[in-house]
Length: 440
Picture 1 (cartoon, rainbow, N blue to C red):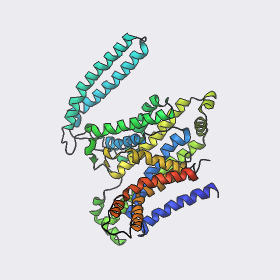
Picture 2: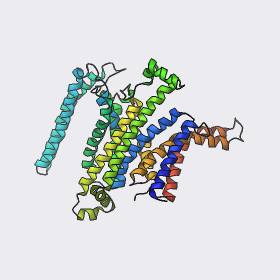
Picture 3: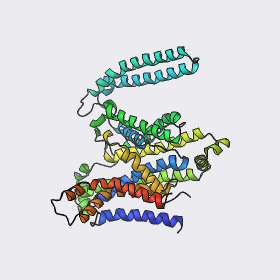
Picture 4: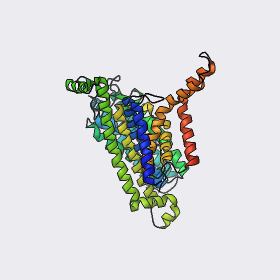
């Protein structure tokens, strides 16, 4: 079977699963187009995340376990770009926060300058400690009262700086830029490490990013969340109150509530598909270019590539930034879809482990494989729980309703997700270790 036919059949299989979810009310399929479109939308976003990770791992062999942090930064960009400014926040402390952050950056720059300009010895250490100590004291003296002033503004509904009030679609590339900037800072220090140490470093930095978002209310409202973010699609309730839309829905025999949700989700599906296709085309062009061949040569043998005059560290930094930027774009898209930023929901299981499963199952080094893995694994992640419940109900059908064993097994159906993901990963690694669509 040719690669093109195999790829087409696998994508057709995923498409059939989504169609069955929307049209068939049997077995574990819900028979709801709402559910089918929601799975499709999150599958498209997950496919974009997997595409970004595939650039880093499949092209260059970089083991990034901090995907969660870059996705979260993309979500934060939506708040900073598209939400309305909080009235009075800048006058109460916003300017002071910016001054404090600039002061902190200047302190670090000064400490680095001392380290580079002075001769090694006790004097250099003392001067560096003095610079850092004085800078920290001044930073906290400006930062703390400014933060208190911002967070005191209507803390139940606001308590943060807000954003620039720009169109929300601008937040998607902004999310990529924010994630890329963070990746550049991380890469300048972490990419010199061995692959296992790089994984530990990126995981730790991702946790730091999430901790900052959870605790700095002035930035993202922390665990109180930012809700009601602007959307490129109208809110469903607004459509339901639109007489013209209600009349059109009636013409198609649809309830206004169902019609509004389908309209919004379908609109997101089209936008997400366009973004995915553009990124996929760019990734394919990069893969086939001399730059892409060079990256794979570096991945396969860094020593030989360096002997040929290639700057391995610089190229690693390039692709680390590019892959992280794509993850940031996906994070901004997901936050836009949810219309809210919830820092407490970012966890490594969903935004790191599951994305890696998508890349490995789809086929590392194959862009189409990453997209396939994103769509397929997300569908299974959502549907495994009802599948597991159906399986357990079938197995325990002969037990009495009061059986403790039956109750325990039924309560454990939700854990079938983790079991199934592990099983899928093991089966793929055993029978198709290069993934469903291997690199060619």
